[in-house]
Amino acid sequence: MYFKSTFFEDYQLQDKRVTLGRTITETDFVVHAGHTGDFFPHHMDAEWCATQPFKQRIAHGTMIFSIGIGLTASEINPEAMSKGYDKLRFVKPVFIGDTIHSEITISEKGESKRPEYGTVTEHVEIINQHGEVVLVCDHLLVVKKK
Image 1 (spheres, helix red, strand yellow):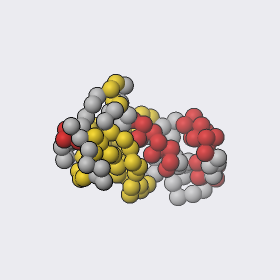
Image 2: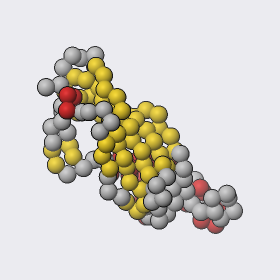
Image 3: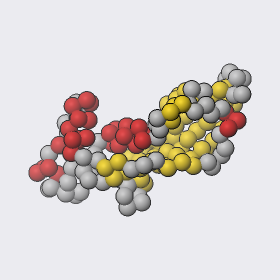
């Protein structure tokens, strides 16, 4: 991880970056359940899940969001602040043993209420080892102008 100043003018529409992958483990399920209190059987009860359509435990959507976004944090931009996330969707289930990575595309740029800043939207897709999109969202940034 390192610091890299990227100003509003430096962002180009359709620029894309791809992260490294990360394999989801049973430990991830247990730790996330402990952090959030979400011990629903869909995530924690292998025997019950065997009787359900997916036949195995399904990763917490919020865990996949957290890990997938964490993968994008390889550089710190002191010129940008996260304003939040929009249009978050859990598209496909993720299972223990799946490997995910994130693909980020600059999808929008605009003006901010404050003239010394602009807005940037990063469209984020989290993708499994089969090339299937499992989660999508838009990351909203406020970015300092030069």
